[in-house]
Image (tube, rainbow, N blue to C red; front, side):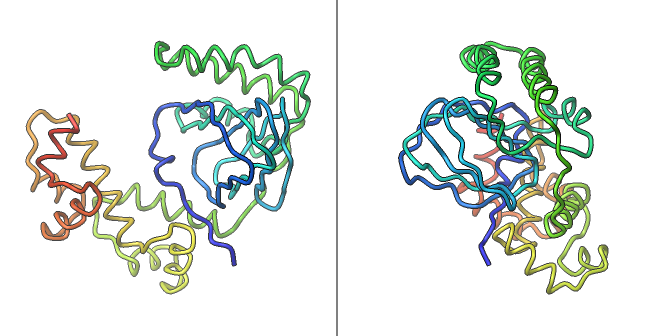
Length: 267
């Protein structure tokens, strides 16, 4: 069974991501998934994208569209250049309403039509740092609106394992400040804890306890950024840690420095 990794770092984005990337022949991006929608525009060259059960070859002028939560991988069939978009929730909320229970095809291959969107993509990329969030969202809505209007929509393909995993991740996000464990979460969903453990390790690549503590640390850093006077002990307990030794151990493991130093850098 092929291992699928969860790109949690992409799911912690709140800002739109758009970059140009150069890929050498035979370069591979292994199978992974994330909660962001992803889209690629191939500037030149050729790449293979495997998304769910479908494998497509994308060439110059093609878009590749990846539905959120779909497992996908890439391979450079030859050297190629591309624009890469990652749309976090605050950037996909509007076009997701239009999609409903459907999605775009993986390969969007009307090159003549696609090229009409290239000026907007270039302008968004070139002026990104000086644009407000509102203007960036405007560009995204226009580009995605044109694609959704032009291409036929298809039903979203279900993956029961991913669907369940998403519910688990959402549950952890909503309850990180409460006592959580493999036992309590598997019981909340009515599943065997060994099945949950196997599922979590396959897709997330670490045990559930480590992931829960990672979410707690991330939430702590967010809260600390909004406070002028931070009490580390109070904040650790507030974010769900029941032991200061566990908190300090995980903090050093994740950030490589102690909380006081990290919070200074976080301001």
